[in-house]
Image 1 (cartoon, rainbow, N blue to C red):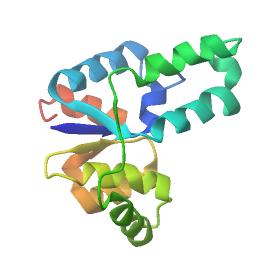
Image 2: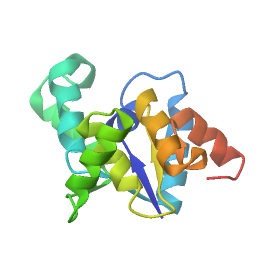
Image 3: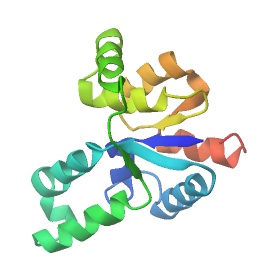
Length: 153
């Protein structure tokens, strides 16, 4: 089974969150034990944009430190190249659900099979995922943590 993790959820581990960092790490470890963590390959560029351009001071004082942070954020997440037909499906999802093509790429990856879940902090993407995949397959890290505690995830 696959848990598709978008850049916003991956960044929680390195950034600020109302969820205690230890709780996030335990949730991530749980997910890594039971799921293959995946993201579209462009997630690396999204994380890089956040680390290097949007909030560089939060992630180190130089490029080498930021690169280490990026590697730790992306460690354990399998970055998937587009599969045959996925660009067409991504475009169709973006149009149908009112998402950016970038966000729809996460949804398309999670929608490739019937058991994948999507974990995102993006409300619009989570709402679109709940409509497309079903409520029980769309989470943010807080709800994923609760589902883990309840034995549902």
